[in-house]
Image (cartoon, rainbow, N blue to C red; front, top):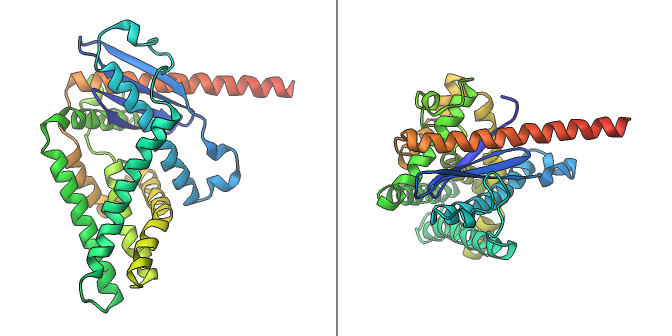
Length: 311
């Protein structure tokens, strides 16, 4: 595989991303698959400092959130109509989607909810328990946080409207597993692979919960206002550390010890994926084909530009 590839499920489809591009493929109401492709140049290329360990995780997470929102906007529009006039152009640019202001508002709202529900609430709840020992306090807070996270996933897994999204999530994983195994890029080949993936966002979020216990242990049990402030301010640090763990998992995933450590996160993916069939796998493969084609095109363009400069 020439380029690192990741992705996510969207409404009636799948988004795939490489270092220089992203593509979203959607199953239209009439059964057709429409694909939109865009370039994506990482801000991490602007400065070596942005590629430092932990820092690069924060950058990658921010970029993934922005691209994810754009992909969701494209998918929501395409999945709602069969009219070609609303498509823009197949395999073209995503015109007419959410603007920067709308994306910023949506991302801001999602981040505020996540930080309050999964960071602040557990800290406040643990502070109400009469525990003097710092270790027990941080451990209790961590257990509350993990319980909230698992409960949240359980509720989502029971919603009928999300079943197809979870099927596309599985299709995304299966297509990536097939690609990383060197199998042909086809729905038939992807069907032979697991719906569990080492670099899944579900596993990442669980590691965020675990690493938070370690990081907050250094803060101790301060006054309530400092508990709240630290839980908010340390979010980037925790996310950056979790990114490094998932990155290592992708590199050494074949190691039995690594897989044993990652097992809880892999198990949780059973809640956020559902068995996918050809209908879902064809969409995932279409997105994968499109993004890899754009990545190769961008690679050739960069090579040609380097030759021009040297000449």
